[in-house]
Image 1 (tube, one colour):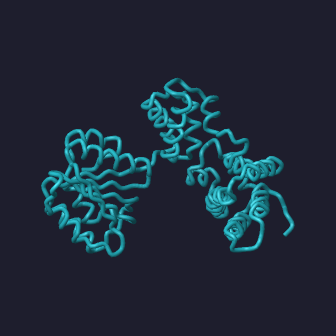
Image 2: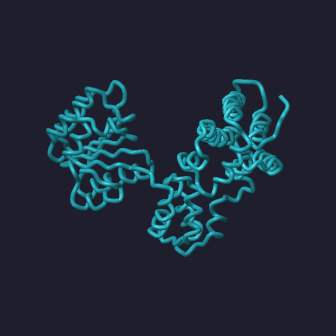
Image 3: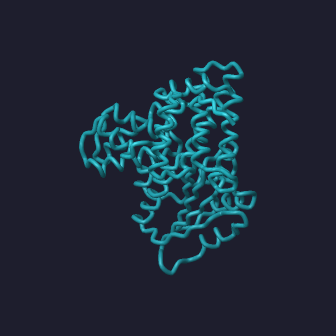
Length: 338
């Protein structure tokens, strides 16, 4: 049986299934689904929990041996199998199919992994677990759905957000539900249970530091050289780690290169922006950067990210902040001499 994360609570209330498979690419939903299953197991008398890491070289016979062995301390047990990469291999696939066919009484198996592609979802071992238990797929929300989810999540914790405030949190999280949840928790700690509008949320979300990485990236994309230089000086003066600034630049340059490639193939800019799920509030900034830089220019900047990484790590000569300044100002449109 397949259920969505928001349906899991109702299923658990009817009793713990003999098998659970939790997979997907949304960290918050995966974490909370696993926590919900563990909590339900404890509440229903599964007093012993054993965890297996199915990495390379894992002995799959251990799963059956442990499931069939009697415990001196607990009548019911939860066996948790963590499956990195979602590929158990031939031996693991057989072991999971066999387990689904011959389940042990008083034992529930919880398998967790990352995103399973279409071929994996159609595999015999996934079908076997699905047929014998419950499969939970954690998928991120469409950007258009995220503000409403933010409002609902906040309301559940007693924080009531206006539509504008929820939209700001969603845009700040850029589709990352875990980041949004952390910001909601922060609001609860700062303000308690009350109604919050855009101004209060903005003051809390954009932390008290005068300059932020988000402001730096937006300023560089907009081509505002003077402001970009000021923010860089502020970040340096506040002791921000150069590696963090470089990470933010690389994170922005990679999708820009991909978008520039689409434009070079004569794809409409609206299609390119939609394909890369650019938030509406940032389309102007991204358009500005794409007008200023051709594909070859952005590819050159991305190569420089690798070179600056060597400087930051001490593997190459140079001053990290000097190199970061050059790289960021070039993104903003400065023509610097070699």
